[in-house]
Length: 250
Image (cartoon, rainbow, N blue to C red; front, side, top):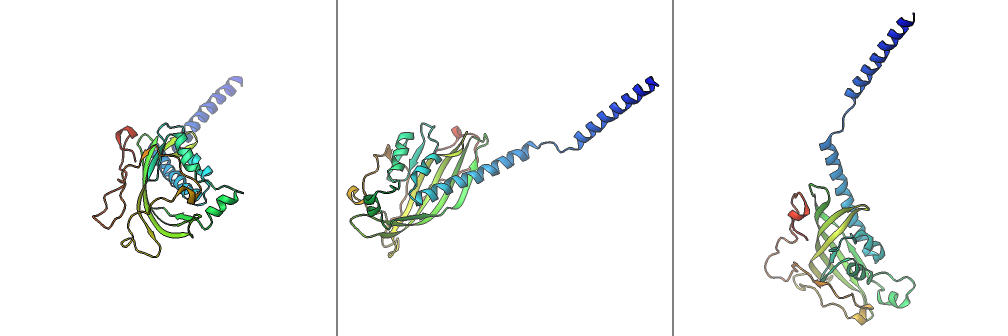
């Protein structure tokens, strides 16, 4: 009897092992190509959100929330809005925070009364590097600006520009590595950009309540509508690339 029970137990053990093997064979195995594709789709979504937050926070002059969107641990982190470029964590932080909303500051509120900046994001082209460590993107941005100051009433303007952005994946998620703003028009609301091309001179420091820190260097490639010639391909749309050392920087 004992031998028969042992034999039956061995049979059950073998059957159990076979059932487990069969179940494993029927369980879908991870598909590396599918997982990679899903990861890239998630990265594209996250990158669009990063620049969306950038737009919304700067519109409210909440630059304390804009600063963490940048990869400040990268020595060449750059914010290049024109007329200059600020490079490195200290310079980027200083330039952004020079525009920070100053709660409870009556003089600041008086200077900035009536100010408004609204920009959209259109035609996104986002390319993730094959190694998954960086990404490149371009966006068109239509917007309106209402400039304020002590010396004049709010000044309404059309503001259209383009972004060229390099992103880098960090332990805290995707961050802005290099952000280059390519201004196109900044024309008065009541005039066409043909009749009022180009950008106005920068406001006086006394009119806006202070100056931005000095740029690290002048702005690089830029094209502003002047009524002459035709626009170049700026910024260059990103194309597939393997790793950042094999591509260009915005």
